[in-house]
Image (tube, rainbow, N blue to C red; front, side):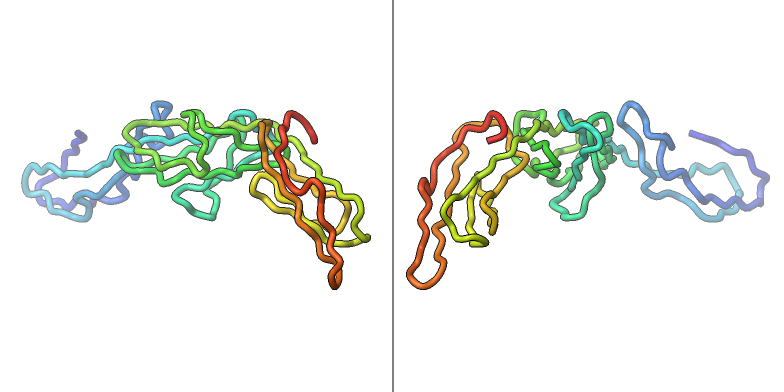
Length: 220
């Protein structure tokens, strides 16, 4: 509590109550947010106790591992398509939440330049991550690994003919003789398929092979 002496019959005006305590972000990850109280003017006619309400807040820190500057990922809270900020190794994004509330889902960019998302520090891999209950200060790390380039080349199509390749659920098209997929994490049994191309009339070009799986341990 904090006290002040005032002459009887005088008027006190309470305003500009401190919004957060402590004012600086605490290393403990805990702060208190002003949530209303007895502000305004009052006449001093007796000893009085005024109540000011504060809510406990905990710090949520989203950080990365394996994503060096200048590469950086956007962080998306609550399913928003608008970034709440960015993070990279050594430069996390931190945000306070009221005690026992949820963060909303936490999304990141799955591919950042030559780096790709490989999973979270709690062992899960879903992106966005499930909403987190803020019962204490918490940290979640997005792990990135260097991604490789997978290139598909065609031979036999007329010049400037559009063709398509699907790899790991993503489809790219091209009118050149190559299609590339970047930021591919090391892994096994990536599926791919190549489309059949119709040029004109009854003329069609069927790829061989038209589908299969790839193991990626380097540029392919």
